[in-house]
Length: 294
Image (cartoon, rainbow, N blue to C red; front, top):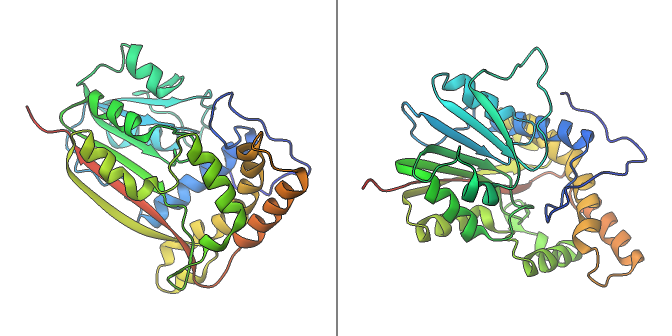
C-alpha cells in the first residue's frame, strides 16, 4: 500500500460501531502510511516495552496488520494475534504475513470475554496504537488488557493528545470545531486526552513500572532540520489530517443538533487549522506498564 491523494468526490464507509473514522480502501492506505511514518519518527524502534522471549503477543486495533506483521517478524517463535473490527486486507508479496501471525475479527472487549485464544493471564505483550476515536471506556479497556496479561507481561499503548501547539503555545483551545467534537465525543465516553491519561488508567488497573515517552509530531517538514526522522510523519499530518477530520466531524456531530451550515463551517475550519505551519505540533505519547509478578 502506498500514499495517495484522496479521490474526489469521496463517500467513505464506516464501521457499524462508535468508531468515528472511515474503513474504506483509501483509509487503509492512509493507515499504512501513517504507521510507517510513526515508526520512522520513533527511530524504527516502535516497541518501548523491555521484551525478551515473549510467547503470545496481541495487536489490538491492528488495521492493515503492518505492526502485527512486524511483531511476527521480530519474534518468529511467538504466536501473534492481530485484532480488528474489520477484516485485515491481504499483504502484498513484498511484505507477506509471517506464518506465526493470525487475525481475529471483532470487538476486542467482547473477544476478551469469550475467545479461547485470549485467555486471562496468558498474554506476554499487548500493543495498541491510535484507538483514540474508537474507545468509549478507557478504564474498562485497560482493565481488560491487564486481565489478559500474564504476571510480568507488558502493555504498550501509543496515542495522541488532542492539543495542538505552535512554537510551544497551545492554540487549539481557540478552535470551535475541536470544542464541538470534543464535547460530543466525550459525552459518549471518549477521552481526547487519552495519550496522557493512560498512565493513570494503567495504574488504576494494577499495572506497575508505568512510564511514558512523549514525541512531538509536526505539521509539515519544519522539524526535519533538527529531527530528520520526522519528515514523513510531518508530510502525512499536513496532507491527511485536515481531510480525516473533515469526515470525522460529520460522523461525530451526527444527531447532535447542529445545522448543516455549521458542520460545513467546522469542516472548513479544521482543514485550515490542520495544515502545515512552521512550529505546529501535537503530542504523541507512548505508555508502557507491567503486570506485577505473583
